[in-house]
Amino acid sequence: MDRHFVEDETFERLDSTEVFHLKSEFESCIFRECDLSEADLSNQIFIECEFFDCNLSLAKTGNTGFRDVSFTRCKLLGIQFDQCNKFLLQMSFSDCVLNLASFYQLKMTKTVFNNCILKETDFTETDLTQAI
Image (cartoon, rainbow, N blue to C red; front, side, top):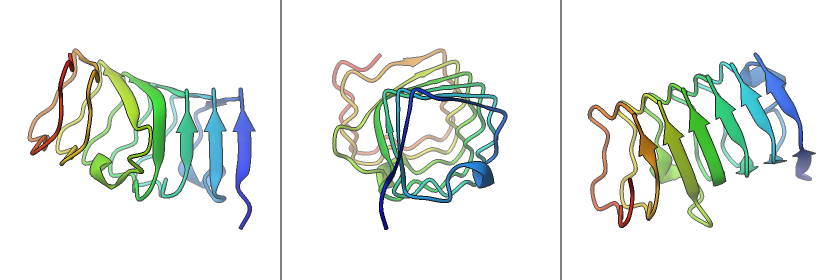
């Protein structure tokens, strides 16, 4: 199946059934107030994207690419980031809830977790060198 490319678009208040039905690559996109809870984000690629006030709780992340992606005021409960595509994996988090998330064995150097809640989050064997 061909990959669907989306660039420089803003998505507001959408849910997972409205955009993630194809293998897609999102570049420089903004997601605002989207309910992506339990969405299947497997095999999607996000490059230089920003998520504001979104709920991605329990989203499936098998081979999902997060490359220079920022999350602000997002709810990310139970996300298995360790299942993401590790190639160029880079994220930052500000004012987010990351309870029960897993970063198991990931290289998260220089990752910023600004004012986040991280209860029962798994950082086992995670490289957090120079992380804030």
